[in-house]
Amino acid sequence: MKTREEINTYHREWCRKNKDRCREYNRSWRLKIRVMGRTVPSRVGDGHVLPGALRLQALRWKKKLRVVELLGGKCAKCGIVDPRLLQINHINGGGTAEYKRLGHYKLTATILNGARSIEDLNLLCANCNLLYEFERGARYCEIETLTGSRDTEKGT
Image 1 (cartoon, one colour):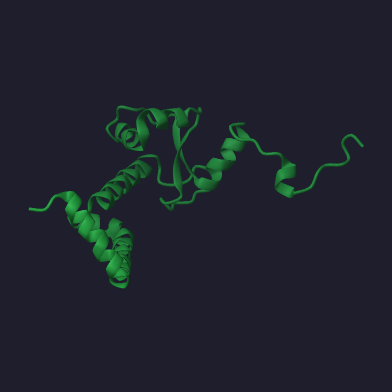
Image 2 (image 1 turned 90 degrees about the horizontal axis):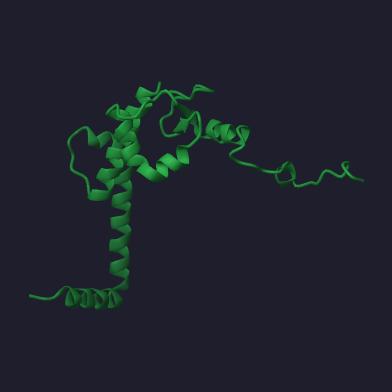
């Protein structure tokens, strides 16, 4: 029986000698994974067993969709309903600290099992959430940076 090191050495040598075949195999493998990634949400309910990372991604999406439903299913400001754009917003701030402490998986789990209250949470789309952060002072950007010009009327 060959050791893992011998197998890896053989594989590297084979790939060096057969570059075109190795590239083609890698391309087809990446394409297969990419295609599977696009169909993950529709295949999860069918009981299809997916590779580890894709299965975890699908489970996270299922949990996120349940949290989105629990929090109203649409953006609190503009009313957009696309779950890909919706984010959990902490009305009183402190969301970053909670995400760092718990992580996304545990935060959604505590929301779903009722261990965390949802009174201080709402859903905002990505744009509304960013604007909300600017409005409450959590982010700052000078207007001259955005427009590319300086205000010359102030001290001159």
